[in-house]
Image (cartoon, rainbow, N blue to C red):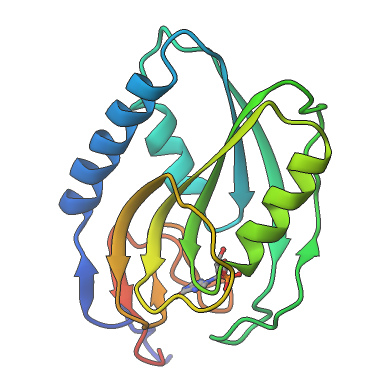
Length: 180
Ligand code: IMP
């Protein structure tokens, strides 16, 4: 039987670095939302581990509601298809709520821009964006990212929830994908 390769490529961000940074992001979010309830909109699938870690770093005194949206724009390649496909939509109305959209990675910004437009049209009171990663070379779609974990080079990365063709989500760290 052929042995499967254990990892995808070289480590870009270690699990320790991720843990420390996520704790800092949670502390900032707690400061910013003091006295208000947050509705976290998690963008699946890639952000599921980040969301789980991030919301546990938010002060328990702040009420946190959680909703999920499933979107895809990459198919099985390593470049954005340019088309946003919404699979599962959120279940509750967002009117009058303070939304924190949580993304795994912002590359072109297309996905997050479309989601912001959609949620704004539904009457959210405020919308902020938290992303674990932002590619430094981000093209097009000017938009403000309120909480950014790490800015990374324009490489395709996997691990800590991020996949290549549905693989490598279970890595604890983030690695540059080397083609498998
Ligand atoms: P954007 O619409 O170009 O900003 O792409 C955002 C989405 O593409 C993310 O939510 C990811 O699902 C996916 N994506 C972009 N870059 C990567 C990467 O390097 N690794 C894994 N997924 C990525």
